[in-house]
Length: 188
Image (tube, rainbow, N blue to C red):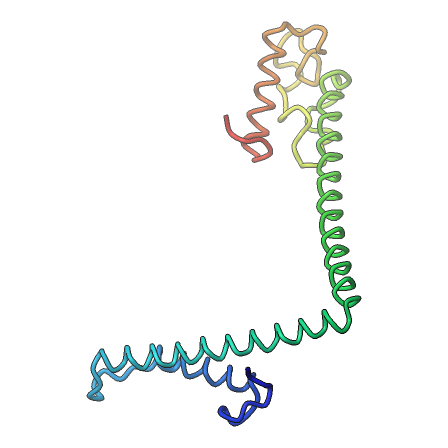
């Protein structure tokens, strides 16, 4: 087959490959509509340079496959070393992905905890005190102003035990809607 010092190209196989690539690009990009060459001649030149480029690329591939085969027969431990390195990189990538998921899970746990604590323990605090890590307020927004509605604590929402089931459902629906609007939950 081919050797790195291929006499036909005047240099090594890599130089030949680069020349073939440049010739291919040149034939595709040159603009000579008034030079007397017709469309068929241009297509023929493009086909010729493209075939040359593909041929040189195949020669390079064969050269590197030969070298890979020599390495695998003469030094089989090198293949094992390469496979181990690839596996190590894959393990690191997957560990980083797992860590990312664990971090997101912790953020969601903290957000849920803030929401639950906001419903149970914040009847006297404003609704915006203590946003969850994702930036969303624990109850979904500021509540009514103190003194505006009779019978409501200054935080705007009665404790969960004093809420009627319909109110609890409405509060949960509002929170889910806000999470969807923020892109944290998929749309219905």
